[in-house]
Length: 465
View 1 (cartoon, rainbow, N blue to C red):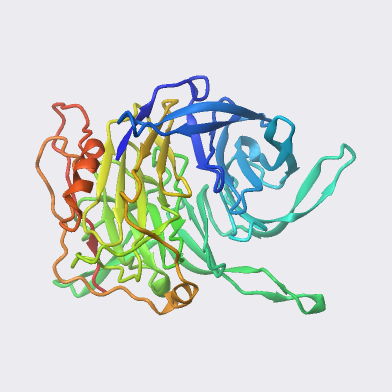
View 2 (view 1 turned 90 degrees about the vertical axis):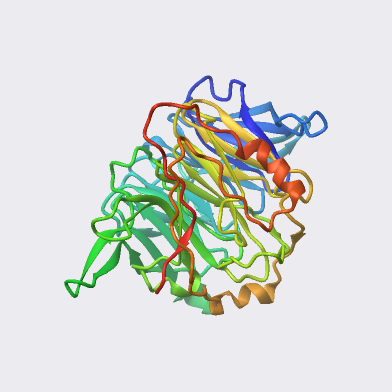
């Protein structure tokens, strides 16, 4: 594993607000406060034992304001980009004599204010977006109409307007049963697909809010009563993004911006929550906490590749037939976890001078990219099979996810370290020695020593029902 901040002019020194890898070609697209989308070819530097580099390829210029989010469709044919002022553009890949290019296909106009997050359905037909206008919109990208200027406008399929403040993150269940949104109103809403009958016997996609995750209940034994505390940060969180994600097999929902208390009088812990698909009805009780350091979590993302189980861990709480890897970004650091470890398998810190804004994995799990408001991006490269042996997630295993549950933890507790600026995570004993040596080249990157109070180092914990 090699990684670091790539010192190039990404967006004319303006903040880089979002990034994503093309699922087929591996191109990296970045969006920034300079109103542009830029495409980059990522170059491996493994032979020289250096961090990967990026070569500029092309710019997509159309937006008239800062680009807050962009995502390639799973098919790779389309690119959606959301910006300030409610702009939402669909780009389509086209072949030309000089190579592949991207052209504006249609404009999706309905949001009244900034679009902060979006995600595609797995069939690349629908798109869900979240906005500062407090709403989520599900779009049917296949439909639309032209106006007098020949501009094609997309079709609003459904408006979800239950939030009372900015919608800063949206996620689409890969099994197409659920969608989720996270807002600065301190709630995460889970929408279930309840298809409506259409003419000609076809069913119409229709989502209904089924669960609202907002508070955790604490029982006070001495007084024989219970008190509820908020699970998420309020609108004072210093970020416009709370990017949440479903696991690629649909078994878990990973939610950032957590603010958890073990008791009403205890200190607040910055965390990300993992909700089991089977237990989404337990709105006040996430399955697992992933406590982080002193800064809030602003984005999470799963690696799209599943791996064989390492088979040597006794601390796994997911009980999956495969191993998944995911990244958790706070305002100033990045944790990498897998579903067989208690502790992070790697961590990066002290790489940027301003807040992290987005994270992305390449489709082959070779690269992990991070964007920041300081105008730079960090690239991490993994060697072949360094993360494990890739496997395909069998259809029958996906269909059995709803029957999966998390076991009760018996001995997992929060551990705090008093070391000054401690950032290196505890190593999972299951990791092979070779991988540990490679991970150390990144996870040993620490923040500069200062006279500030000691930071807490906390291992993940699970919550007893």
